[in-house]
Image 1 (cartoon, rainbow, N blue to C red):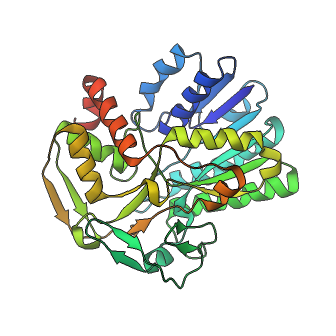
Image 2 (tube, rainbow, N blue to C red; image 1 turned 135 degrees about the vertical axis):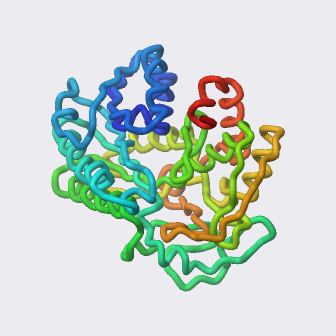
Amino acid sequence: MRLLITGGAGFVGSRLALAFRRDFPECEIVVLDNLRRRGAEVNLPLFQRHGIQFFHGDIRCEADLMDLPGNFDLFIEASAEPSVHAGTDGSPAYVLQTNLVGTINCLELARKRCGGMVFLSTSRVYSIAPLREIVLDEAPTRFEIAQAQTLPGVSPKGIAESFPVDQPRSLYGATKLASELLIQEYAASLGLNAVINRCGVLAGPGQFGKVDQGVFTLWVANHHFGRPLRYTGFGGEGKQVRDLLHPEDLYDLIRLEHANIEALSGTTFNAGGGREVSTSLQELTTLCQEATGREIPLGTDLTTASVDIPLYVSDSSKVQARLGWQPQRSVKDIVGGIAAWLRENEDALRPLFAP
């Protein structure tokens, strides 16, 4: 088998590449990345040791894709400008060029030279205003979805694929939703075998988290290195909730999708941890204290960003029904794995997390 992963030196792409190498020693794995995000370069020696071919290129440049050698059995499109704040404080050019024009270039490569494509989209395609209108109950350590709701696609299990996407959702979310629509058209009109996964928050060892993307890894890292944090928005108590997904659970899903790619082509799935693998920032703080043995100063900022939401939990019932998939790694597993990675690589990681 020949596998291509774009955005392959990033957190998710690199973990998927290493998982495929572990389970398929004979697989020819090619990754392409522009190395724009700090920390991606750390994965290059890993690729070399594991016989993974790395190409320095950018999906915004069609030639960089078309110059890749040969055809591919599976193409995992994991490249993106992943910040929900992208383009809001200046020019939106990079997020638009990468997440939308880049998708067009990837689709052309997939149409001509790939047997199947798995596209990693995001829960951020769902509109912000409806997400803020979800009726919530306030528990001691978190917000919870109330039983009675007026919006479609929401229940105590989480947000389903039928939740509204017809209002603004951020430039990042808009580019990913537009990409989804194009992929569906390529599948329906041009015969491309493609599946879309709307991922919840991906987190785990190997992620170089920042406030705007990868905040859960950053939360563990700041506890490990003794750096302060603060709860922001929605009352400033850290009760906002997200579900988490470990890359190994995503890998398990992609394996199932690849095995059924023709039957699933054109399908969009939510892929997240759900209520069972979710946490509030307040609960995460407790887990970080347990995993690192450290407490750090925690401040409060009542300012709520325009793109922020109090809760997102994936309802992945659709993919569970179709493929029998559900996440196996808990929030505690994820936090513990990140803490162990930080301990084992402290000297190398300190400049990235505690400069």
